[in-house]
Length: 521
Image 1 (tube, rainbow, N blue to C red):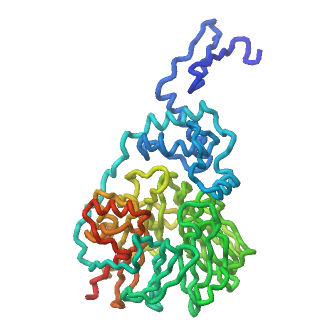
Image 2 (cartoon, helix red, strand yellow):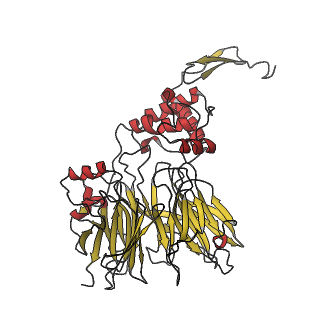
Image 3 (cartoon, rainbow, N blue to C red):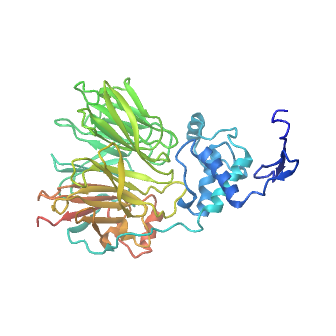
């Protein structure tokens, strides 16, 4: 016999609906029958976890059930996952309320397969796994830094630069050489303000602006997103901002949000790295000399949020450091090998519900190595509940091509943080904003973290920060007194978000909030 004359195996299928458990009856050499024990709850969960890991990790890192509450998993996140595996729970249509052009693009990308890639039995096992282990309520942060309501370093004032019903700021960028502040909004206008935040010029655009740079002795280069809300359409452009409005350097981009310029292949001309955030589809790409016929794809995934170009490993070649979001939450380094070739290394990896929103490279401990200041708080998708793991983090560079988390400040909905020595005491302070802020304390949508050395911070805010939803932030010496000031840009998705703040007694809603540094006063 196949198993030998003393060994026979008989299988019995139980609980066909969900688990398909197999029991074995073995005939031992002593002639006795041994019936396998009934599976324990722990063993069933272990098997369900393996099933969940198998399917979840096929696209992104495995999310632990404890990250979200039970209702969010079962009613919001898992149904979307089911669509992506070709299932249609309760006959739900993933294309409901989408315009025909979006439906066509999503179908062409194969986002929601027509044929199931998982059995109903395995899917129910995954649902039961998350439903069994997820907490009833969203977890709360276990520790934090108390936030003071006093902000002595800054004088704060609000500015309204247009007469529109709500503010929807998409871009803030300061040009030190001209002392001009560029402000983009979702209504497709670009405002140019002087150092007093008075209007100097207005540009009407085809699409909202998301990034801009200022090459020496040349007009600015402007990036527009195309469609600001989630979309697959390729309407973004990178072009020169001048009176002629010439044809774009690079057209037909899928919702680009930022770009960086450097001579990557060291041929004496500028190359362009563009973060095409997209929605279901997107790319991180670079173009030799801005030539669209010389396009190189670094990541063929949505969620490219920001890049910095630095020589990270001191080999005299510029490397690319990129932040990926949209479920592919990570910080990735593309090490330059010369001649336009790169080796990719993921240095930080997070769960798909992490909500990565921004990063900067800065030396926090004075060891001459660039560390990572990272924020996570993007909460616009399928799990829009308070998350204890949202906030501001510092990852110190250990000098061996890896980064270790060394400091964390919980801040729900964090959209951006910047590192500057605002008080000129020799270490880096942090200014952070929250876009998806906690309405119990809307003033916490801005926090100033004063560094007292060795990553010991105190947190400060002001009641005036409650007057907006801060999606954008910029720093610069706007008043030319030798220290860094801060300006915030407000973005209300709709009038209903504004009325939520009215319910808190807030009646003034500036588009910009200026924090003038009093250090040199």
